[in-house]
Image (cartoon, rainbow, N blue to C red):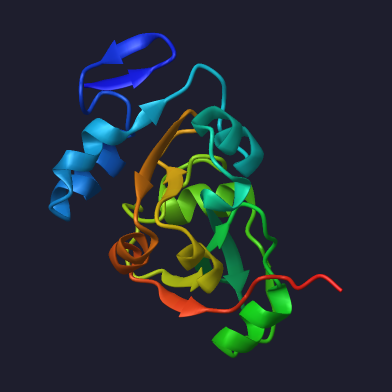
Length: 173
C-alpha cells in the first residue's frame, strides 16, 4: 500500500499510468508501491523536498531543454541550476534553450512539474545526468504528476533513464 496525507491508497493508483507501466517494463514493479502522492503540489524541487521531508538536493529535477531544436533531458539535483553553456559544450550544440511547456509535453507526455526521469512518450531523447545526484544514497523524482514522487538510488535512476553522467551544474562564484 502507498500512503499519503489522506491515508492508504492502493498500489499503482497514484503514479501516472504511463510511468507505472515504465516501472513494470523495467522490472521495477515494487516501486509502484513506493510512489507517494501529496495533497499539495510537488511541482518545484522546494515543494517536493518539503513534502517528502528531505534535503532540497535529494530531489531529482527532470528538465527538458532544446539543443539546436532537439529535446534533451537533464537530470539535476534540486538545489542546483543547470549551466546551459556546459550543456551546450557537452552536446556539441550551437544553442541550448529551455523547452516550452508544449515542447515538454510533446517530448515526454507529461506536464512541467511532473516529468519523471524515464517512461516518456518518445524514446531516444538524449539524457544528461549531473554527477551531483550521486552525492546521496536516495533521490526523489516525479512519478508523472505534479503531486507524486518516488525514491530511487541515483545510480539506478540514471541507468534506467539511459543517462550519461556529466558536470552541468551552474557553479557559484
